[in-house]
Length: 178
Image (cartoon, rainbow, N blue to C red):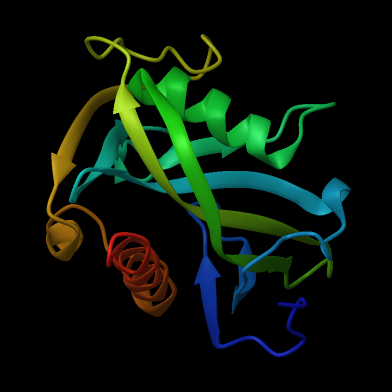
């Protein structure tokens, strides 16, 4: 699949500081056509059998998917594996792209990408609290395994979030049909 030029979902978003963003979501089977330098965030819809992993904490101090920022010199897959291990003490066994959103600061026009993967993971041991960067309390303090259809009991990211979760379920079920 090539990178699509037309988004399937477009939403406006205003953050807690009042900054307005345009969010454009695209389904994708590959991230090869994206400018790696503009890929700033990687998150996974992580399956442990038929449940998904969610974490509590982060910058918004709420429930959400597991993932984080791309570090200098990392591939996108390395970021995914590192963040999932740091935040959940789980290992990525397999992953495949779900899609990405292009995030554009409306005032400046500056844009970057946030990538989403469907992952299968396994526990490495007991959950260990992720301290984040140690200074801003951005770490994950709790994780849960939940039925993917119940994610809105914990967080609601609008139409884009719904598409990401639905596509992750579709990809997971396709993989396990046989």
